[in-house]
Image 1 (spheres, rainbow, N blue to C red):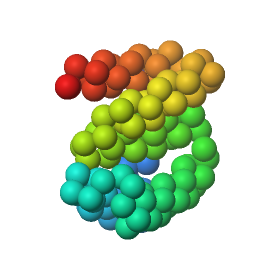
Image 2: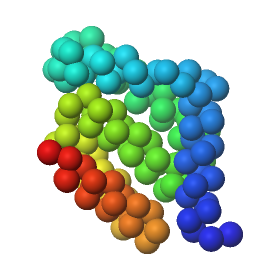
Image 3: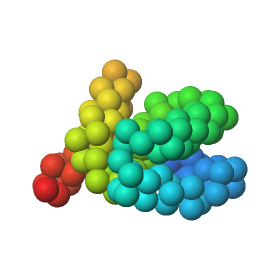
Length: 123
């Protein structure tokens, strides 16, 4: 199986489990909280922490493959970006890029670079 197909399957599985176990709308309150109250607001931080803990459980259930770990990071970056925290989103994407490089996942590295370029261009 090609690396690209494995990445797509891992991300799809992550999204499927996320929707089944946590609810597909779980991101919306996080994004709204970031946008309206800010990243340092106690309730927003609490919600982000809870979201991350739940996502880590999904990552563990899927075997903590590089693809799944990076899928989590990309999802987290998108939440930050949609909530108005572009710099934090870019930081997370650079963390994901580091993981992809360490694991020698070239296709995944290309995808992350595309995400970074899109976010860099969205000022």
